[in-house]
Amino acid sequence: MYYIVLLLCILPLFLLTQANVHHHTVCSTVGSLEGIVNSLLSTVEELTDLAKQRITTLEDHIRSKHDVFHTITPISTNATQIRERTSLPVDCFAIYHHLNQTNGVFKIWPNFLNHPIPVYCDMETVGGGWTLIQRRGDFGDPVEDFYQTWTSYKTGFGNLTREFWLDLVKKEDYKTR
Image (tube, rainbow, N blue to C red):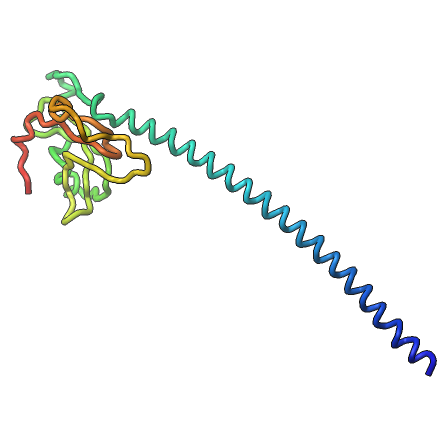
């Protein structure tokens, strides 16, 4: 009987000791996991910042390529330009019907101009094939102010991948649908 009483007294102490050891192990593991999670969060934040920087760099490159102010091609009638004239579509509607139905910047050569121009084509709205002369929107960091001079509206301004106004020269010859 003495051994049973002794066992009943020691057993709870043994179990408490084991529980305490497991508790410390669990706490230590949780602490380690918290450290790992914090490290991963820091890495994700760094990668997100790097991705944002690279996207900005790419957007700046695209903006510089599609800046309305740098798109005028000199007038020429050489053979290369004549071949290019016959290979370029006259508007976004022609691009759409050649089965390219993705929004974006395309090079067209309207019949009323003596040089090709880059334009933004909307291939989704009401049947697609729209050549946009104005585009406004929320692109996260609005940079284009549409409070411009008449000269700016005549010559065009903005960025074809974001907000822009295409020039008004000879637009009266363009048909609307």
